[in-house]
Structures are given as C-alpha cells and as structure tokens.
Length: 360
Image (cartoon, rainbow, N blue to C red; front, side, top):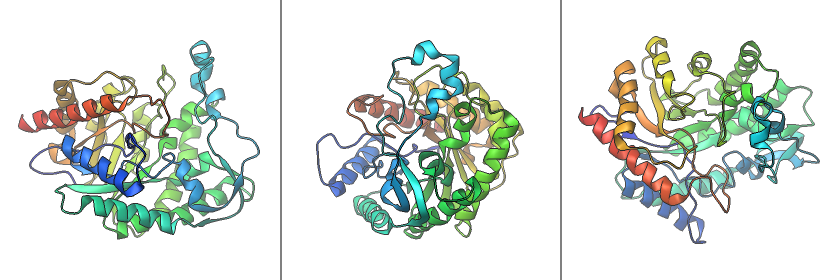
C-alpha cells in the first residue's frame, strides 16, 4: 500500500514501552501519539501489551505446559562457534524467558487478548490522521522455534497445528480493519542457528514452514498482509548469516503484499542489487530496513535517503515503504539494547530521509 505521492514510513512493530507504569490503554495511546508526533505513516501499538514478539503466545495458545528444560539454540549456533571469545560471558538470548512445551492439542485461547489489542489501537487512533495501521503476530515457525513439542508425532503435524491455531489471531486482526504483519525471524535465522545447516537443507526446512504459513493465511486478502523477517537482535559480528540472495525466492512464495527485511545492517546493505533480478510480482512492495537496531549510531537522513533511493531505482518508488531492520524492544528489559531517546532520533532520521528521497 505504498503512496504514489511520496515514500511512506513504518517500522517493524516493537517500540520502547511506556516510561512510567500506566494502564495498557494509556500506554497504547502514548506510543501511538509518539509515532504520529515523529511523523511515522504506518503505525502500530508498539507491542505495548506483549512480553515479547513471540513470548506473548504463552497466554494465547492452549495445549502447553511449563518447560522442564530449554536448550538455547544460540549457544550451539554457527555464530557462537565462529566467535566464542566474543560471546563468552554474555547473557545468552532467551535466558530466563518463559518457554513452554506442547503437551496437548494446540488451540487458540487468546480471543480476549487480541480483541483487547484491537480495541486499544482503534481507540488510540480515533480522530488521528494516519496512512494505515498494523498489528504484528508471530509466525507458525516462530512459535515452533519458541515452544518445544512433546505431543505431536512429528514436526510437520506440530507446525500445522500451530498454523491452524494462529490463523484465528490473523483473521481477527484483518477483520478488525488492520494490516496483519507476520513476524518470522526464524526464516532468516535458521541457517545461523543450526550449526550444520547448508543452503539446501535450509530450503527444505523453509518450504514446509512457508506452506504452513500460507495455509494459515488462506482466504485473507494478500494486500492486507505484510511479512517481516530478520536476523534477530544480536549486537554481534553476525558473519554467519545467510545471504539475502538465497532468501528472496522464499519470500516471494509467501502470501503477503509487503516484505520487510534487514538492509541497514552492514552485513546486508550491499544486497539491494539482488532485487534488480528478483522480478517482484505486481501488487507487491518492499519495506527495506533503512535504520538499524544493531547500533546506537543515529543514521544521517541523507544516508537514509540514499538507501531508500537504491530500492526506488530498482523496483519503483511506488513499491517502496521505508522501515527499520527489526524491532527496538522485541523483548522488554530493564536496560534496552537501544535507549528510547536514540530510538526516537533514529525514527526522526527515517522520516526525514523518506522526505528527502521523495523530493528527488
């Protein structure tokens, strides 16, 4: 849904939580007001109600029990094996997080929660001018990676059970009039997380997860769906991430209109050229990240504009929306990776850079 007149701006969903403890409706109002004040066009509720971009499913899916043991995949990943000295002593990702184990049929029990999110965002937007609004939801692959299976006979049946349950949340978001964003970092991260994975095995793994996601999206208008994948929130070397050229064919199989992905990350900034040969189907658009969550440096608006123009020159300005690489508070913590004041400065650069790109 990019605008024909100028480059629209958005982000990937999670934003700093309200600084002072307030009731959830007030927190949503605060973050909506902040986004509009900064000039963001396509906004959300900042995931103010969520304990994490995927951890929130703990309260929305039935069939799970407390996990007896969780093995952190990062600790055996290609990344940790490549840079053991750097990662030694660092707090492992997901340490202390509430992972569950599937011990019964997966069902959706989050109806009240998703309706609460819908109503809080709708209320906060009332009377406020904005281009559009979205609500993120975890992909089946994200849930599968977060919660282990001890009930279904194999990975495929477990995955499709999750897809069937999450479909109810997806439909509720779209039926409420919002754009649905599918959060699926596992697509880009699988290669790095699995120490022995190669491109061929990654494709085989991804094809099944995409099939499950597309089944969950069946019947939902493609133009009301956007898809986000990324390489996680790790502020590390990240030299073991899969190249975007291998992901593009997978992305284009997903029943979504918009594709959000990392580009400001210097491991991937050169990859804009891939889209010259990707044959982006009609009706689809790109949401490249033009500001990064992996550095506290605030990008200059001229740099942001240059990044946007690269994609506009390749696929056309009408098929580009400027976004961020990933969320800025995917897992709320006392000391965030990027301080809120820096997040706001980055988003200001995003807006100013889009304005500059639109004027040239």
